[in-house]
Amino acid sequence: MLLARKWRWIDKMSPMAVLYVIGLLVANLTTWIRQENLLATNNTIGNICIPLAIPLMLLSCTLSHWSTGKALKSFLSGLLSILIVIIAGFFLFRGQYSSHKFAQVSAVAVGIYTGGIPNMGAIAQGVGMDQETYLYVTSYDLIVTGLYLVFVICFGKPVFRRLLPSPATNKTVQENTAIQPAATQTPKANGTKEIIVPLLFTLMIAASSYLVSTLLPTTIATPVLILLLTTLSIGASFLPIFRHINRQAETENRQAKSFTLGLYFVYLFCFTIANACDIRQMDLAGSLNILWYILFVIFGSLLLQILFSRLLKLDGDSTLVTSVALINSPPFVPLVAALLNNKDLIILGITIGLLGYMIGNYIGLAVFFLLNAA
Image 1 (cartoon, rainbow, N blue to C red):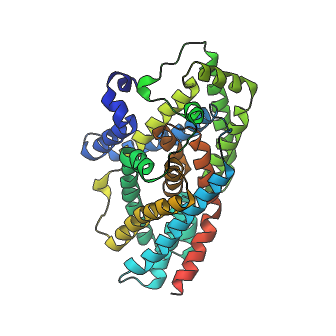
Image 2: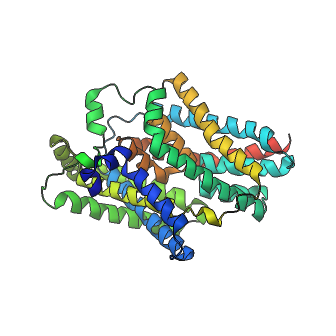
Image 3: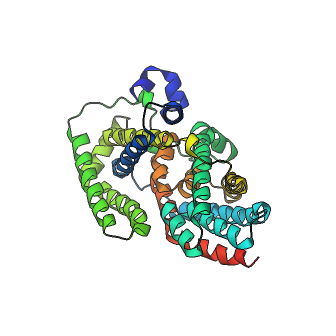
């Protein structure tokens, strides 16, 4: 973030893209770091970053420009796109597989790309998927979603804003909701309250949310954690002290310091995701039909969602954050909001991701029974 202020090319390319490339290089070119140690470190840091980033970023948000109607239209267009492509891909790519086995793959794909990892594990158990197929699906998913994330970070913003309407027509809305580029953020020193108070609230919110999630079954622990982080953070953002801090930052035409700190954790999370992707450890030739199927599902649903968004007159930013919330899950939403310079998208994206968590298991099992009979 400091280098982005000094070297414009980093800010223009996005610090996220630079960190992603560095992370991939470290993961795939280093031989002096033990891979198990690297993965353990990445998991630890990644698990800490998002529970801290979400409250820090949401505490500086306002709900005045957020639309429930837009959230519902975005969610339904994204969900329908994924389901159409998953069902079409079943008939195109099952090849030598029996309907029963590839229906299992399709059902698990529904779980991954409407909800997330908890849905995937629950559906895999529910449809009786064997361990070998499960490993193929998870390995290929890691590769393809990594490619998708690279596309989003490097090309998502210009592509979506060119193909779809602008995110806002009101100049005041854009000024109030935009995330200033790293190179231009110059917060004024106005006491420690602006950073200490949000940080203390963030630690309390993260700790209490985590403690509650540990008391629940593992299949629902992550969705509940994200839900609690979001709900408590939004509620706290209405407190007078945060309204005063955010209003003062807007008056000085800058971001609140808490948001900048949250953005730092998002960048760190992006680095750990790339740093955990060691292509050398993956059996890429295990079952290529599943790889082509996952490629088709992710990028095919993206194209279809763009078409639906044009019909529904949804803007490019909302469409992109919806796609990432469903394909990559809610923890990636702050990353996209930072990329798009629009912090209000955090609430939209996390809401859509949580809806996917809630209905993913039901839809996944329904798709299995439907395709298994084909």
